[in-house]
Length: 146
Image (cartoon, rainbow, N blue to C red):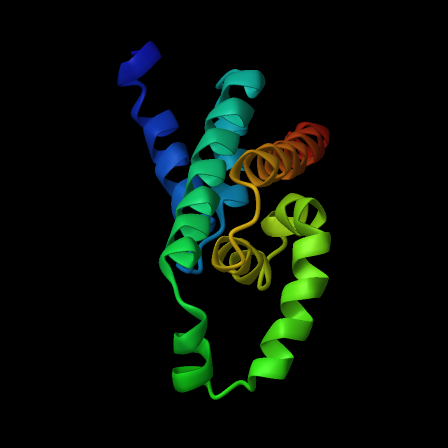
């Protein structure tokens, strides 16, 4: 079956979504398997990018709902430290959104950008560009192997 009933693409979407949240999961392996099975590479990259981007934006939304007071209270981080990092991240929000695909720190970037209330459109576009480029490179590398 193809189209909307292609369960492998739905699985890729879900895997990519989960990989962009705090759930430790690798969607690259799924993408490689799907490409190796003969699925259209462009379709697979677009599906993976969409899922990963929506997952990243959900992390952004979680951060957006957060409060600075919670960081001070529960994480015991001083207000001065928070303000210093706020200024650093806010000025470079697009760069951090672009790099939100980086394993280990990408989720922190996405949540932090939401907490900082960075411009949602700039964040969304930069995040989509970074995640899309990551999957394009991965698909190209997978194509070299298979």
